[in-house]
Image (cartoon, rainbow, N blue to C red):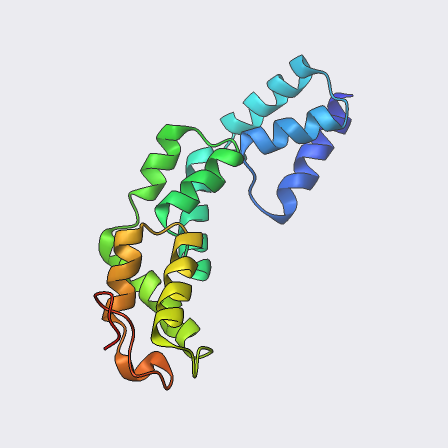
Length: 166
């Protein structure tokens, strides 16, 4: 049973890094006894094959850069994966407000290309909702949307900046 459990862990870790909780869930699903699983997970952690802190740092870097997710969304994802709060907080320190604003701005700029001909209020609402789904606060979302150049609003006269179209 130990060899089988070890193979399960190694096969699971081959494709990408996993959290300790994900691996524990995988072993439990495959019927590995809890005491055997705990011993193997401890050993894999000891030799560095399982490192939740490194996983969290890599996850935050990757998901923030590639998907534009804000710290709030990243925190939820890492918690679902079983990463401890201390590792989550440490990993999220990588992202400062400038990084968040740049990522939000990139999302808005990309989305603006497909919003040609929309009413300014509709475009503003959709952009704010997009940023909210990505975990940005409403304050930052509207700040970024307001800062979007009017000519990038794809044919609209501008975005709503203070409740009125510009």
